[in-house]
Image (cartoon, rainbow, N blue to C red):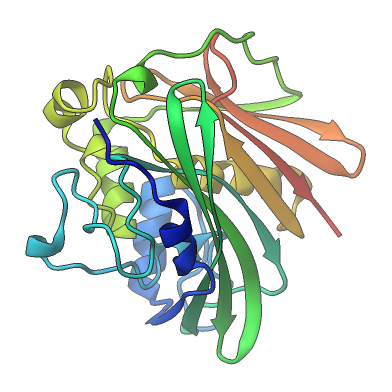
Amino acid sequence: MSAPIDIEYLKGWIGREESATDIVTPQLVARFNATLGTVTETAAGAIAPLLIHLCLAPPAAPMDALGPDGHPARGGFLPPVPLQRRMWAGGAFTFKDDLRVGDEVTRRSRILDVSVKEGRTGTLCFVTVEHSIVANGRTAIVERQDIVYRQADGASAKPAAAEPAPKGEHSFTVEPTPTLLFRYSALTFNGHRIHYDAPYAREEENYPGLVVHGPMQATLLAHFAARIKGRRPATFSFRSSSTLFDGEPFILSASEDGAALRLWTARSGGPAAMSAEATFD
């Protein structure tokens, strides 16, 4: 049973800020490309892959500051929400400029909102964070990140009844092997055990397998959109609605919607796990 949520106390985190700086190195770009199957140049000044900023300046908590799930313990920049599970529920990106190999990149983060709602699986707490990604003094990306916290009651392992996802005009199949999930966790320095520790995922969090990262799905969909249109999007927004697991291929799908693209991920015959929209200048 989770502790009661003192929403007024948690709202005290609204407006809290932090920043962190990293460099887009050729080695990071090479590891990103090798993991996700992208092909980009690694020479200084070359355009870096879309959403590689999610791999830059990750929180580096010491081992004794981690919770049992592998995440950093609660508190600090993010509010200490007393619900056991934390996931990236959705977000949006506005792309103003490219990141380039060799750029010094600063992520400036601010808590925009904290709210509590009652959902199908119980109490949910949402934390909205804005990130400004500044490269060598220029704002390249503005990002909104929606984080959801909920109780560890096993409900997440039971998919909600939903219609199967439609067939898109464009599609591409991804095999979410444990190695792929581990390598993406390593790229983003994400210690959350649901992505690489199968016994923990099954026995402690009641999942049927390893969980496919939301950020990785968003990255794959954004790259898929860029390949279809031949250029990076101006904006990209997404929302997660169900969970994908290792051992079962999933499909990236897209359909034209006027000047935009609607995109989604789904396992074969399953509902949309992540829905997204990309717009283009």
